[in-house]
Each structure stands twice: as C-alpha cells, then as structure tokens.
Image (cartoon, rainbow, N blue to C red; front, side):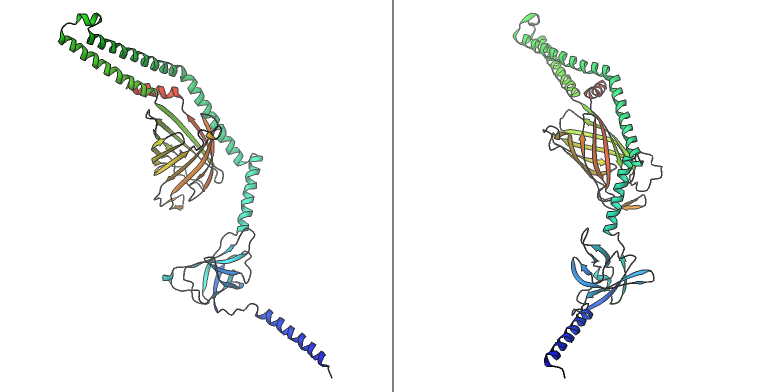
Length: 430
C-alpha cells in the first residue's frame, strides 16, 4: 500500500505533465474568433508561422499555416472576426527593419467591391525581399567600384566624357584667342565713342550758355532774336540726340551673353545627354533670357533600355536674378515649369562656388515613354561646384518622382565680356 506522501507526489507529477501537454497543444489557439484567408505567393521569404498580420500597422491576425499547393505557397491567415477585409486587398511579406522580423502586410481594398469570404483564395504581391535588395545593391556598388578601378565600361564612358569636355574647353579657348584682337578693338571703340559723346554734350552746353549771355563770337554775331532762338533750338535738339546715343551706347557696354553647355551621365542606365543654351543678360541688372535645346540627340534612334529622355526639346525661359538666387519660368526641357538656382553663400570665400538648382516641370504629364507610363511631374535637382569662370561639376537626381536617376554633371559656361561687347556692337550696327 502506497504512502500518502507517495500518492501526493505522483499526483503532482501527473498534473504537471498534463498541464505541459495542454499548454503545448493549446498554445496556438486563441479565445478570439477568427476566419481564414488563403493567400497565394511564389515565395514567402522566410515568413514564420504565427507571424502577425497587420492592417495599417495594427495587428489584426496571425499566420496560421504555410503550405505548398501546386507549386504555389499558400499562407493561411487567421483574421480576427471583427475585422472585415474587402476584395482587392493587397497582401505582401515585409520586414520591420533591415534585420527585423517579417510579417504579413495587408492594404485594405475598396468597400464597394464586397467582402473577402472565409476560406477564399486571394493573390499576394511578391515583392523583392529587403535582404535580397541589400545584396543586389552591394553587388551593384562592388561592380561600380571594380569598373572604375579596372577601367571597365563605366570607367571608359567617364574617361570618354571627360575627354570630350576637355576638347570642347580647348576649342572654346582657341576661339576666344583668335577673336580677342577684334573684340578688344570693339571695346576700345565703345570707350572712345563714349568719351567723344561726353565732349560733344559739354560743348553743346557751352554753346547754349554763350547764346543766353551773348558772350563769345557766336553770341556777338547773332544779334537777330529770331536767328538766336533758331540756333538755340537746333543746339538743344543736338544735345538731346547726343544724350540718347550716349545712353544707348552705355547700355550696349553692359550687355552680357553666356553660352552654356551641360553634359549629364547616368551610371545606372549608362545614358548620356547634353544641353546647349544661350543666356542673355540685358542692362537692367535683374532680368535674363535663356534659349536653347535640351537632351541633344537623334530622335530616330531606338532608345536603349532605361532611356526615358525625350530628345531635342526646346528650352525658353524668362528669369529674374540677384546675388544669391535666380528664378525662371517658361518652356523648360520641352514642358512648362519653373526653375530656381540658390547661392546662399555668395559672399563667403570658397562656399560661394556651390550652387543648388531645382527644376519642377511637366505638371500634367500622362504619357508612355519607351514602354513606361509616366504620370507624375518631373522634379530634377542637384548641386554644382564651380572650379573657375568656365567649368563646374555637379551631382544631380533627374526625374526624382519617376525614375530617380543619379547623374554626374559637367558644365562649361562662357561669359567673356569681350564676346558680350561684340554682340552689343552687332546690335548697334543694325
């Protein structure tokens, strides 16, 4: 016969064992009533059973089971009964962070489409997992670095682009050197004309004074009052004409023209493009005009994969400027829009070499370019660093709301005052 202590110990052991088995078998159960939705995926990317199901960031269920059925992964999601899901809801496997846990994300469908019935099969969205994206990105970075170090395709393209920029700079310098004697003569002529006009106006003032006072040879010879008034009127008109000519010549001397060439290279798609424009700065001191062609190229060529640039687009702008900013509007790269350049450190040594630019155009865009649909505005922005008065480089993001392509930029800007005076003289000759 067993002692009472032995019976009590045996009963305790059996009770603990029963409790353990109960917790094991009933641990996956919940007192909350649920209904199942079967979501079909090609790859669940390590999604665990009992992972949360979240709608708008709020947990609304659990992953009950994961199974394979006809080469398709079926995720059985147990959704809380009080949470309705509508037809068209999108299911995807996402991660809470770079090294976080994965869960089933739900984007609600339209209420008018009706409810998803319990046990119904729906299609999930197979997105590229974050860990795979990180691996691909690191691989791309490695390929880029290897290409630069080993003179690969990117290195060759970059070197070729820099050779073209150097050649263009050399050609411009040669052109300036050949034209400089003529331009210097034009500038000297403008200065001489201005000085001569000053002398003429001064002499006209002296003549008027002599006529009024009756001094000098002219004053003593002209005794007839009518003749005196005629001479005074003629001299007054001559003085007004000389003043107008002086003002006009002064404006021409302040007339400025900039030739502007931009070269863009996008490493991700290995696409290059060029812009050529003429910027005119009148003597007002605060307005400018820009006319040119963007994305120079042959429109008949078949675009390469990832090439979404529309070739040979007209660029016509009117703008206002001061020391630290400029704003322009008009036809920018073939579409209506606005552009802004900022130079917040214009009065700081070295920092005044940096310029930030934003272009916001094509607001109503809704068309297909190279088999891709574009329906958002074109937002392009970048930062440039100017080495000297002729050359600058920059880093840009092109079409940030759509393709978001990173681009390396090189700019050649020719703003020699001799060239401006030359065009001013040509305008004066007409």
